[in-house]
Image (cartoon, rainbow, N blue to C red; front, side, top):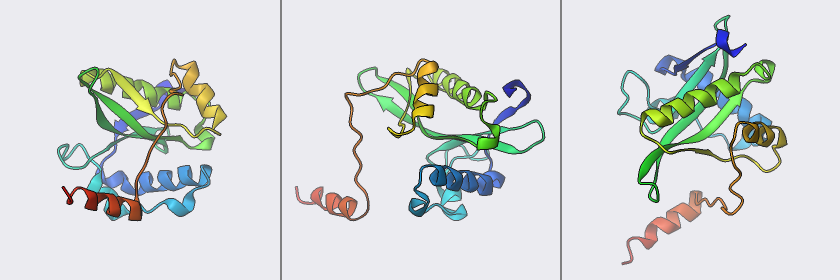
Length: 170
């Protein structure tokens, strides 16, 4: 059970495990070709306990009783203007298939909820692919609510470059 597993923040020494988990998640989502992360970019952009002010995102790892990394929750802080409070955005939650149905995902989400409350946060949020019914059902069983009225938006690559120029035209 999950009570035998341990959860801890990732350190610099865990970057190769984080990158492997990112690749496994991308393969599950049929998007392996989109992964651009490298050990160097993760070291430059993630936050670690040794220097918590550096970086933009933190990672919880769940370690099985034998010391193997079973999964991760990669997250960062966000902010709600309407609630005037911080929160946490879960970028990626991934449990390796061999470790599913052991309560590890629930354990990581519980840790994220505690982290949210510890910073005075009011919301823990994340996105789920529409086709991922097992995950949607799991999250709803924990009390998560679909935000059907919202549409995710993204600007990247060339469109991001073009958009950045608009700010210079005022």
